Image (cartoon, rainbow, N blue to C red):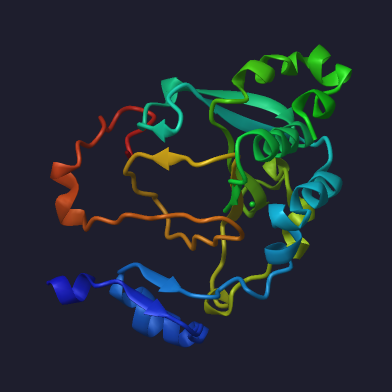
Length: 231
C-alpha cells in the first residue's frame, strides 16, 4: 500500500502519452522539476528582477478581487474570516513593493513607499482602508488567466503569453489557468480540490503536505453543507 502511494519525482518531463499511461493512471501526486523553466514568466515576473513593475505595466489598473484575511498568516478554512475586496491590480502590486521594502523580500507567485503607490484616486475609491491592512495578509487567490467555461470572468488574459502549456498536458483540455500571488508567507488549512491540478511555482517557494484519502476521518473535515466543505 505504501509503495503504491509513494510520490514520484521527475527531473525530465515525460511525454504526454507517458504521463497519461504511467503517471496519471496511478492517481498519485507527482513532482516535475523544471516544468516551467522555459516560461517567460520565470524571469519577467520575478520580483527580484523587476517583475513587480513588469506585472504592473502589463495589467495596470485592471480590477481584481483580493482576499483580506483576519487570521493571517493561516487560513483555517473559514471563509467568514476573509473579506473579498475588489481593487486595482496596480494597488496590489503597490502592497507587494511596500512589503518588500519595509518588511522583507518575500513574494510568491503561483504569479517605493506605500503612500507613493496609493494615489488620491485610490483613496477616493475606498482603498485607504488597505493602509491599515497592509501588515495583514492580503493576497490574490485563483485570479483567472484562462477560463474555458466563462471567458467573461478572465481578468489576467494579458499574462497568457508569458506561460505555455507543459508537454505533459498537450492532449488535455484545460478548464482554467489561475494566478495565486502572496505578499508574504501564508499558510492554508488542509483541503482537497475537486479537479486535478498542476501547481506551477513561478517564483518563491511552496511546501505542500499530502495525506492519502484514508486519512480523511482524522483530519477534522468541515461540514459538507458549508462554503469550506473541501477543508
